[in-house]
Image 1 (cartoon, rainbow, N blue to C red):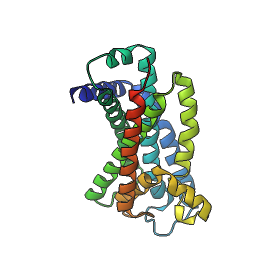
Image 2 (cartoon, rainbow, N blue to C red):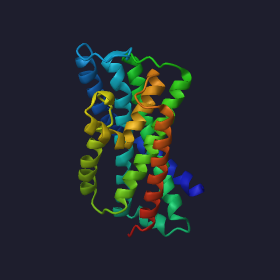
Image 3 (cartoon, rainbow, N blue to C red):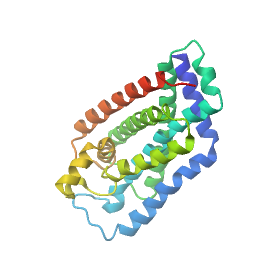
Image 4 (cartoon, rainbow, N blue to C red):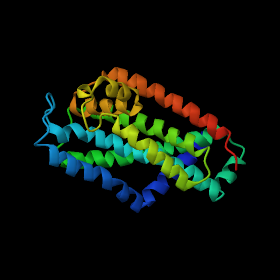
Length: 249
């Protein structure tokens, strides 16, 4: 497990030292919180949501921050491949699965930090957490989102050589995932065909799990959300490990 810890530590240090990356990743979530949250808070009325529309979208924006940070962590694989670090790692007498797990946990940790920063900002903007256990539940779901989508990004990156191509494809993938997750709108109000698509989106269960933890309300049973998101996380880790073992340098 030493290799997992070493690669995790490397990724976390790279993230913490990259102040521009941290600050840049805050731009879109804060913009959506301020513009959509405060802009539509007095217009959009959601029954059963004590905090209004801004309270409703805060868990979704936190999920978005974790999603974007985690899924784009996969680009580190391509970066290391192009600059030779990955070759040096792969020829070492260690398991490729351990290398992949270190990358996954490192990317998920960075995503959790990013999501926690947005959560702290949300508290200053008026979010009131329902309970301390609820806060723990939200963190657990943030961890699951981070692990699953970091592994998802690594799985894609393992089959690609170009960083620009990876970014373009991930942008094409990540926005539908976020858009269909119910982060910005209640899924119960959707047409049946669109609600079916939303229920196929794994991020939906992460958003609803965080929403339950922070606000005490959810449109999906939180136990079901946990089971489905955990199963998706395990599946993505297995897929990522399989594709990473076949990586060529």
